[in-house]
Length: 235
Image 1 (tube, rainbow, N blue to C red):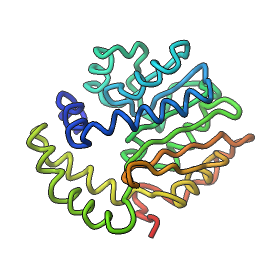
Image 2 (image 1 turned 180 degrees about the vertical axis):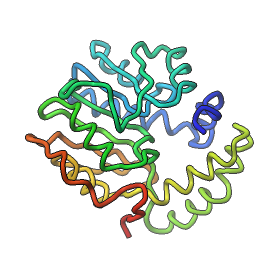
Image 3 (image 1 turned 45 degrees about the horizontal axis):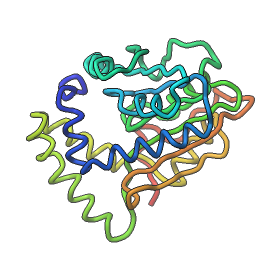
């Protein structure tokens, strides 16, 4: 699915978000800059927009961009991402404590087991390394019903017209509605190898940035109670 939409992926993202996605990544990159990591792993990197935003803020950092879509990675390389790797985020080909910071923008939601993905991230992080997750969520209050209508009815048609892949964006709408958010998400993160997980809702609560620090020592044994098949979310 991601290979099929890769060619028009950036255009669809920028148009459907009204260009606000640039600001989301800028905000995330500013937070990462404050940590001053030397080695950064950008998981589910897509076409490389977050990796490039981080590189602009931290030109001295070594940034490795990983995705399981070969077409997405090819576009990331064309845009200037220097270190790319085709790999599965649940089985990363890196040694323990290889990175100071791991980022996942709009990608954790698509992984088959969120808890397993977080534990694998914790494995490759250095002691006290940082995690940043940027993803969509369902807003609260009056905006919620209108946003649900947009996701279910308008977004797939608009994105389908841009990419020719309406079904892929029907999946996007479904995945956003089932993805944990707020306290449920921070608890999921802390249950899988991290401490001090914090949520920073942005743009009226349609997206959120989550940050956390690796717990030491990290327990990689107990699985999380929340997975992609367990559709628990914050009420």
